[in-house]
Amino acid sequence: IAQDTINVVVAGVGANLIYSSPPFACQNTAINLTENSTITLPNQIFSRSWTFSNGQNFSSSSISVLPSNTGWLAGNISIVSTGNCITQDTFSIFINPRPVLTLSNIDDCSNNNILFQANNIGNAALNNYQWNFGQASSGALNTSILASPIHFFGAAGTYNIELIASDIYGCLDTIIDPLLIFPAPISQFSFNNTCESNNVIFNNTSSVLDTSTIILNSWD
Image (tube, rainbow, N blue to C red; front, side):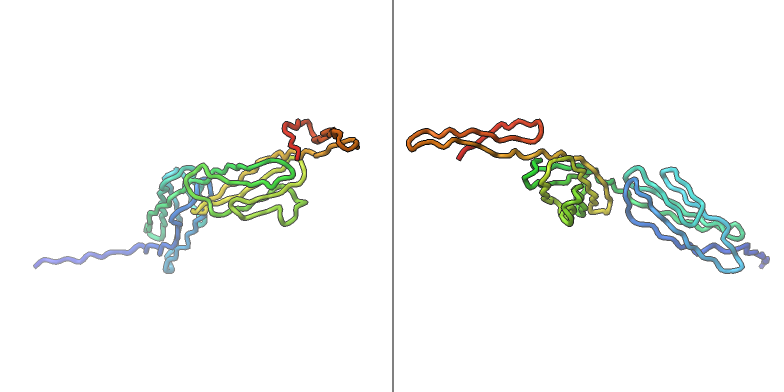
């Protein structure tokens, strides 16, 4: 029986790769990732590298990757230690589209309650709302967390309606939409005193404070 002995020199050991990645994230929103790998002394970690399928590459422990497209984002992390030992892992993050908000409102007169509605052009349902009606003088009523809030302005003017809303995946969008509130007409009339059995003539003296025109009058 022939035999031989081979001496193997262990040049180093691989690092204990420690990192975490979220299962999903939001389009155009930074994903912060941190690697905290360890290694037994006297071995050392010399470098680390992150590579992503969207072409972004990094070489530090804490990184921030910005996904511009939706769908799966593939990533790889690689640690090089003493003896050129390489420890690596791959991962994937699903990128959800950000909501695209639009606003609608019912009515735009100063003396009416105005109902607001938020809409998402995307497919995901909205589930968190932060409204600001741009009327600081209304105090605590100037904000709302309702899906379809009602606000009473009470004065004509242009108000910047702001909404920050997020969907069921935690992705959010902000919209600021100017709303023009028209002044309500001022109802007035005059008449002349007259005698019994005579006709009374009523004069409509109603007015509106801007260039709008009163198009309908109703007497009762």
